[in-house]
Structure formats: C-alpha cells, structure tokens
Length: 393
Image (cartoon, rainbow, N blue to C red; front, side):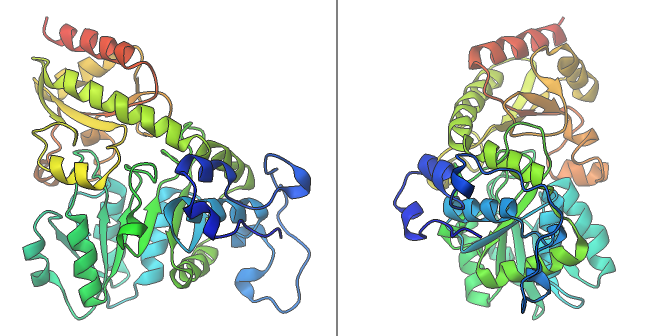
C-alpha cells in the first residue's frame, strides 16, 4: 500500500489544503483515488487477524485513505471509518467499556445515543449516569471507581447547548477517565477537540464530512492504541463501510471547509431573522446574544455550524403547518447537506424519549430543527418568512 503523507506536512497547511491533499499517495498516478471494488486481497504471511486483507476488516485502500485524511484534519494519530455514525458511537463505547464499568454522559445527547445508553449499555452490565454539561461542580459526585468514559457532544442536538468542554478535559485527565466527544455538529471546520485534549473524537460522517445527503457513515479518531481497540471490535461486529461509500466520502470531504463556512453564515443570518418574527417564541443558536453558552461558543469555535432550532407559537400543530408551507426546505431527518432540511425532533430524532425527558431537554412539540444548507440566505429567509406569516393568518 502507498505511503501516507509526511505527518509533519498537514500541520503546517491550512485546513482547506489538508482536505484536498492529505491521504494516500496517488494510485498509479490517478488524481482521484479510485474505488477498490473487491472483497478480498492476496494474503500476506505473518499478519494477525485484523491485518488480513479482507473488506470486512476495514483495510482496503479506500478505508486507509479516509483514515489518513481524518487524522490530518483533526490532529489525531489514527482513525477508522464505520458503516454509520451510530456504529462509530456504539462500537467505540463497547471497545472502551466492559461489564462492571461506568460511563458519565451528557444529558442532552443525540436520541440514538441516549437510547443506546439507556437500553443496550445496561443490558451489557455497563452503568450509566447522565450529567449536566454546564454544572462541572456536580460531576465529581457521580464518579465511581469504575468510571472509564465521559461522553459529550460539541453542540447538542437540537438545542445547540455547549458543554463546559475545557472542564471536561481537565476533569478526565485528573481522574484517568477517557474523554469522548461527538463532534458531528461542529465538524473539524469549526472545532478540533483532539487539539484541546479530548481523547476520542466521533462523527456521523453522513452529515458535514460528506455534505451531500447520499451516504451513511461514521468515523472515530484517536490515539493508535484506542483505534486498534475500536477496529478490533468493529471487525467483530461487521459494521464496514462499503468501498463506493468510502469513495463518495473521500470526495465530499474535499469541500468541507467551503460548505461549512457558508452554512455558518446562513445559519447565523437565519437565526437573527427568525428571532425577530412574532410567530417564533424562541431561537436556539449560539451566535445569538441570549443563548446561554454564547460566550463559550465564541471562545471555542470558529463557527457554530448549520443547525439551529426554534419554537413556533402555537405548539406542534402550528409548527407542522409552518413546515408544510416551506418550499425550499424539505421535511427530512438529517443535516449537514448542501440543501436545507427541517424536522420536528419530538417526532424524529428524540421520538424514543418520553415527553417528560424531552421537556427536560427543552424539546417541545413546537420545536423545529433547521439544518441549513448553502442556498442564498435571502432566499431561505423569504421561504421561512412566507411559511411563518401563513401561520399567523
């Protein structure tokens, strides 16, 4: 297999350059890495199980290229891609935890992650305690001798809370706990948590890393030791990303910085306009001065991403009517793509939680999540303004 780029080179280059030029050396001179559409390769004597050249073991040239690119743009030492974001999250936790261990988890995580922690983890003998990411003084009371992992998100879904991430790193280092962060919503274009001191960075690569709403993937970036554990577990579970999906992700990542810059700008503009509309009760976006973590987000992030949420006056029925009147934004449960999408978290991403749990997280029936694309911001606002004005008639 071709050698990867000199590890010292990416750190000296702008992120936009690293996104284009990091990865494996060009195969036979090809400017674009081809799809290696084969399930198996000639054997190499003396390799252990995880090094056998077989597609399920996540070691095709397409997988290796993605790993090299991910480490170059995040500052990690090693990486692995998986068949989905949830595969990346669940596999990482199973690789780092065993029966009898304990995990601390932010209380406002993605709904799928919360369901894994509340249903699957206890069935495996793993104890879970949730914490308020903003109340670091209360964390120590929940630490046990068996606490091994502390899991947070850079920006929470869908209320865009920003945990005290600096304190999470310090807290974990002091106690020998592995700090894990899901950085999907911020993306490496806005935040690089490994450089801050987090041990493990996760992404649903379906979202910003790919950016075109045409594949499902996940990734994990960390130290070589931790990634070896994750790969070994992933190989047992079989959550392998198809080579063609790897190719699409390789292609999508090249424009990450450009896309996210426009999404940052569009989301900030849309949040400001929505905040002034009488049919909107409240807007959640960290660039707004009334956001509880406005100053923290300004200090930590280059931008706050393309996701915002707002409460529609009148509740769930009114919110759905607004969504139904939108012409540019489609009602679909994803984010990070070039097109704008909307959804109601109460009936999509957090439908698995009880009404009481959703209320505690600030997720009411009238909350609309907007995953902003790269359209002209003025056109997006005109679309939302028409839909909201119709709600007032």
